[in-house]
Image (tube, rainbow, N blue to C red; front, side, top):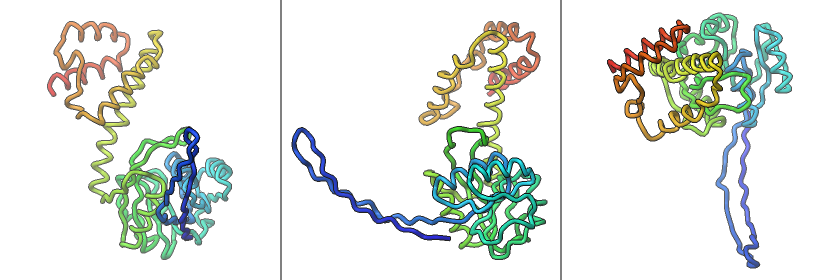
Length: 286
């Protein structure tokens, strides 16, 4: 792990309307913790975290993945090496991030022995103790975000950490703070699991509804982009209003005439109609 310090002092002269104005600014000391990272996994979370870590100045020392092609592609992108056997994972990194599917974490952990190294998985609903046999310094590095490796724009993250000891927690917190402007939050398994449930409602289910809307638009000759101002306005209002205050529409108004017209339009869309009826009844009871 490398430690660097930046202590720049900056003096500027600006020419404004022919007059020179002296401006002094001193940038506070900033501690930079540059860490050597091994990423275990080659999927969506691994790809997004790896890019963010590189951008923050860290070194991706190696990427391990059972999918040799996916691991090699990321290794090429990050100018590093890849491995597809756990026996080939280097033992000289500072932090090892296990970014694999929840159901694969235990199997990966069973093959890892990284004595005294810091090892953390990125899952919400998996106990950190699954890594107990790997090292004494284990934890969780959970980014609450929907991630796809094909994303062009790097998504904003809120990262939740948990660790087996204070020193490991400090390192994970420092690593998290280097890739997000949001405060790093502590979260045990219970909190992470509850956050994950809420996230499924807020992201996965809403995206499913976007998909239904998009498929309906496509078949009806409507551009889904025509709905984007509505979607953006709905999301932006959440910064100032609670969801319960924002709900509008025929179900809330109990406008049965409009609801029946919608149901008629959906008669050739059984999946859409089933969801429409369920949510309409739920909103009318809410």
